[in-house]
Length: 239
Ligand code: C5P
Image 1: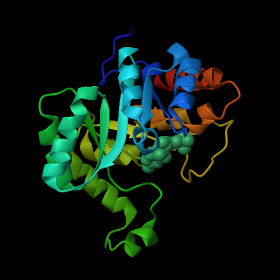
Image 2 (image 1 turned 90 degrees about the vertical axis):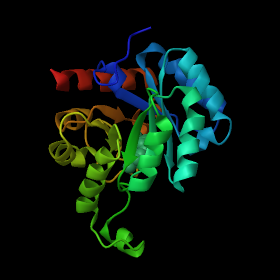
Image 3 (image 1 turned 120 degrees about the vertical axis):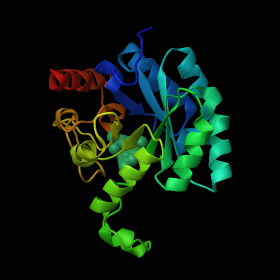
Image 4 (image 1 turned 180 degrees about the vertical axis):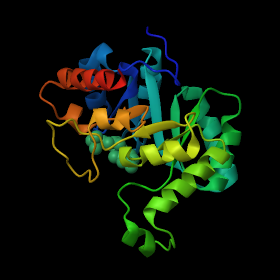
């Protein structure tokens, strides 16, 4: 098993594959196919709400890193106890909506464990008009930076952001914050429904630490080869 240091991952450990598939069997088959090329998996609502926590335990037993993407938000006591309940899965990352009170509660719940908390500032599918419709008085850009700062103050270890926002966030928050970016597309693949996409190289150059890449791998004819090509692009961008 390769060692893992969340602040100093290898190029391969920087790739996070989201298991966005409808069944645990399908997820297991993808994990088997990707084998030792992929070290890090993200599980979200789709699998966790149908027994996916068993898979989290299997991945941990196999020496993989796990990102639990549940984007927590509730009253403080519920967020805190929810985080406490999740500690037994020994995930590397857990997401919390970047509301200051929720992040502080999650930080308390995390206690002295190794779990790293990631703040989700403004969902990247929201534009200014949608934020206004939801009652916000601020535009997406400034709100992302404001919430990123609040995330750091609340003790979050990192931020989920688009690679386009990564350099501004890094400038505001300094080098210690972990930046995890979805919306990544190698030049050869489709944009799917992602609007502001970046290549793996651009994301790394903009200061992202971890890249979440789903469909370009999950829908590839040769998934393992697709993952290898992304890892090799990450490696080249780091040199
Ligand atoms: O298939 P694709 O590479 O677009 O998958 C991206 C993953 O990252 C999905 O699991 C999606 O839910 C997640 N994500 C995202 N944009 C965000 C936050 C998370 O695409 N702002």
